[in-house]
Length: 249
Length: 311
Image 1 (spheres, each protein chain N blue to C red):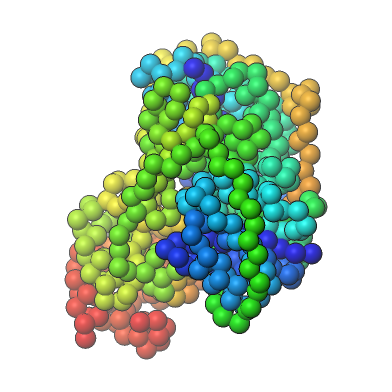
Image 2 (cartoon, rainbow over the protein chains, first blue to last red):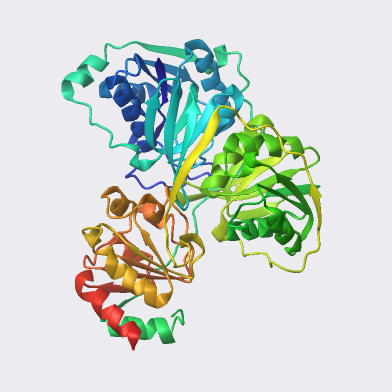
């Protein structure tokens, strides 16, 4: 069985996003970019499934600009076998990304596609569900545990009130939640080896996939800032202020 | 122009989130139809018909909807979608699970987690953990949207007198079966709708120490939350998590204890009306958003706070 994992290049988790001067998006020039944290979890899960003998090949797929090769190389250094980059400089909507993934699914016929539940840039939380819908593969989102059992998998899902478990028939699309695993760090020899692993690059424009969107970003603004309040000196003063000034208790 | 609101419910009652979504639907301005899918959910359909502003309720009753299986709900919604210009969901775990499927099956873009309605086709939504607010305009014939519930008030549960129409169920997916659930049992208010939330972070040091927060929450009738750091460290289960990748809350009072205030945490609570921070590190970023800050060791402050609340 093959496993496809999606890896997206995003503004690093620890970098504060700032709106650009023309209010069209976020300033991404000269800032640290990294793999979306949920995608690291996806790569890790795929590798663990392979290491347990339930998969033969892990393929890291990214859709984005040329620099996304670095993100794929990171996945290869973690242990993925090969990479596929569908290259575009356009900022695509999740529906377009899902359609492009569908194209790769048709080529590779994976048993599992594992994606992050959301990317920390757009915070959309859409692509996995859309891919499942348009391919007809079963859907298991927000996974905190994956147990393979032949041609089915038991997925434990994070829901608002706790955990839910479902059984899905493979092939399936899973999306990762935080507690699924703790991703490994790539070791130096593996980083060197990753440079020699195959990475196939195809321009999105060469594919017969409709990536148009009718959703347009009109503008991007800074959120309203909260101003810092006062420092109180004691618990007694805090309780007094909450009771008599803020009147919230 | 008609809006379809997909209701969520449990134990025979509408979830509060659905009332927030109905308010967002009112802001869009169309007639509002509510879809109630369930297994023996006639009471919920009747309750939805009473909500202020609702002009029609569609009720589908079938074992396929006993749980919130995305495939089954999406196919039902698609079967009823014709004629609607907007389809709205709550941005809850259940809503997020289904909403993008519906959009993809209709071949339209989805708009996640809106916090404001500018007009019938233009919405505001947070991106980058709320560090930026994007104004987006949809040119699709059907706008498929999830709504950040804390950004909209609850619609009144009475005042409406909509007709309830029974609609046919669609076939259940053979690919997915429900096995079971383990839900947190608590007598206290639910995290996303509580008036007061007391949250703990890495500074709590371990799960046992959350008992101190429980004690304070008990006295304030508050819910207990946590930062991602506390969840990652295994102190508390994931459903406690407040932040970009967890729950978004906006209570009247948010008490952050031993939480440094990473941007990802602030994303989930910075719209709270009053924020209190208790942290021994006076440089902690949480103090920059707190209305009241107390620089103190939480292991001294919490027992004292608990005692003060008795007085």
